Amino acid sequence: MSKRPRRNHSPAFKAKVALAAVKGEKTLAELAQEYEVHPNLINQWRSKLLEGAADVFGAVPAASEPAVDITVLHAKIGELTLANDFLAGALGKAGLLPSAKR
Image (cartoon, rainbow, N blue to C red):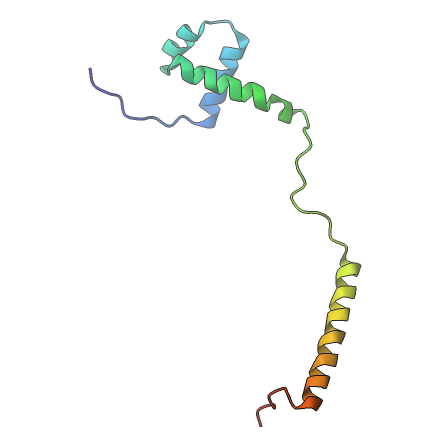
């Protein structure tokens, strides 16, 4: 008895088999023989289908990024620019900044 090479089933195939299992018209053994897959694999696919079924009917997706208020960011940029300019002037007067290349 030789081993069959490992197979990768497409998502469409998995969905088809899982839906057949959910319908319950045939036993797992019959489905396994028809589609040439192990019954445990059919059980796993059916479980995944049932777990994800709620998402089909409008589960709210998690917000990937919070909304950004542009005006607040522009105000912060202005504050930091002002502080940088002030510090550059103060350090320049104190002679602590390297002189510009001539």
